[in-house]
Image 1 (tube, rainbow, N blue to C red):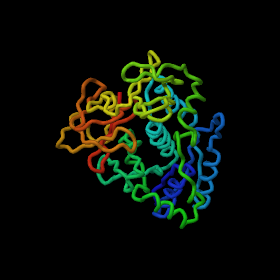
Image 2: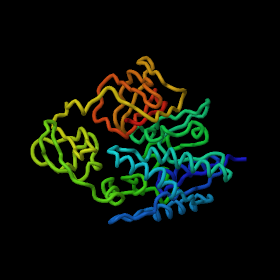
Image 3: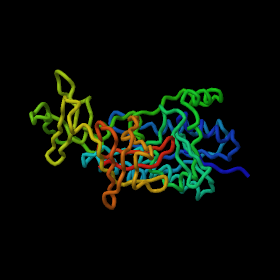
Length: 356
């Protein structure tokens, strides 16, 4: 009897090909559309209905059963509110990471298993090695598309109950497979922007959800007023664009003072606050045996934001109950509170923590 796999189908080409590959491999496949967000925003229509229709059409093309899981209320509380609370505090949280942790590899997995699935599958560019115990999360073959940065907070047991078949392919190959099998999503553009509201930019989303924010001063690294911001929550460390400060060399955000509603900028890329070798982490999550003491000989690398280069780790040590001190061998630019530091050893994802 074939293993029963529920595939999260978003209406995009990646999850469409995921379902196709698993069916071709002999699995008993059921497609599932997760209805996480349906709210329109001013000037932007939420694309969920189009995505749902595309997912359903692909399921029909593949002749597989199709379900809808309505997670909208849980998504709001676990992902959206988490993100909004972070921005209110002046952080730059990552909703995609929380979505994977709380929705796709928790709620979706639990409900799928309760309805008879043996495993779930997603269209992530990552790989899972289940030959040992525990299962290991590995980087994708296509390093330009690798999504393991967003997956490091998955529960260890969930890894052993999940499949990510497109991690062995690059993007052009996925589109080619879709076209060869006449899938209607073969040429569908990849979604951009926030994970759950498509083309809407983060500032537009925050304005719609939180309303206009109090304006305040923009100061340079000498304490001189160089402009005015329209809400400190909209700015992130290292940001260059959208500062509306004219003339000369570009400015970069290097600090925010939320209590006094001040954004600090500099033209000096060597500004001390823009660079760091020592980083505090909280909410550490390990996918392998605990790494409370990393040494240079372990050859562990860290990535501090999606697509950022990997940097060698000098040490990782527990400093208190929920805090760790990460030290790297070289300085990293624009360390951003609320983002994640994710650890790698070769192609294996070890885990990570949230920068604090």
